[in-house]
Length: 375
Image 1: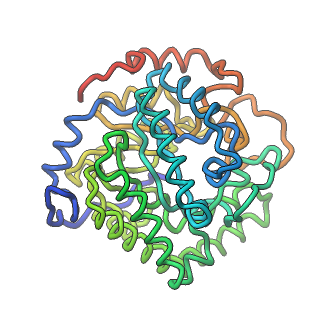
Image 2 (image 1 turned 180 degrees about the vertical axis):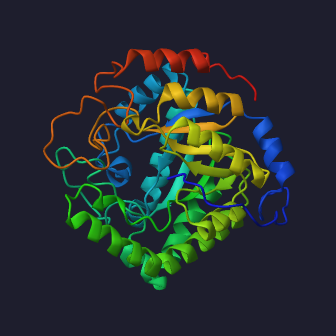
């Protein structure tokens, strides 16, 4: 993720004050100038195994969300990136809207502005209803794709996807509590469930996945384009984006050309981050790093946060509290393993104590414990 992709291309599209089309570079820079330095995490409450469990009526855990967002604010986080799910809306649209409103109220009470995500090609096929327990030792063992392969291939189901997106954006298009709209997480990513497999079968499975990715790309990219159109049709006042995540020049160009602000994912060392920032600056738009921080990959708070602060780039690490998503384990850990000595993601243990006190001290120092320093 975040490997060099070649030179950027394309020019800015037309724009209007209401955001019907892509923002101009000037509009994007103006928005960015008015923001504090955005620092946060990708948030799933520790009581939820995936997005479906987070947002379903029977498992929406307000107390946990309030408690854990309070911990986030206490270390200076002023934003979270949060994934919604289309199946929850399909089953209970009014309920999802009410729970999203409650979530936004809780986040706002802690000074936290969410970046909301609609679609996602990562990890496992979604199943509606009560979710399975996590597989011990497996990173994101029940994370659910949205909309999933069947709905992605069947264009007859896209009417409900459009209704879902338009309903959410229309309700919050002028809502100052919402930082922005992250339309589609890692489109065409079908690799992650394979990483936990042992060799020699893993290499062959990855090769097959690469072939399958090319075959499935048409549907993912078609939904990407449509989803951006659906979001913009609701005239949001917030920026719209989708993150660059893979060394595919055509995919990067498409993601950047659709986005008001350029977002990207990064799980590599600091030297590579410096090169990536310099390369992405050539798009002429503010940058947001919507995923980073993987300790065993040498992608660390202490190496990356000072760079993001210096370069005025909003940044969201993966994970907050050790819980049912099990993201203290890495992408490659296999089932049944003991707790790793070095956690992959997450900041706090379940009781709110920091995994590493020195990381929390660094976050508090760099953020001013939630101070809203203008960038």
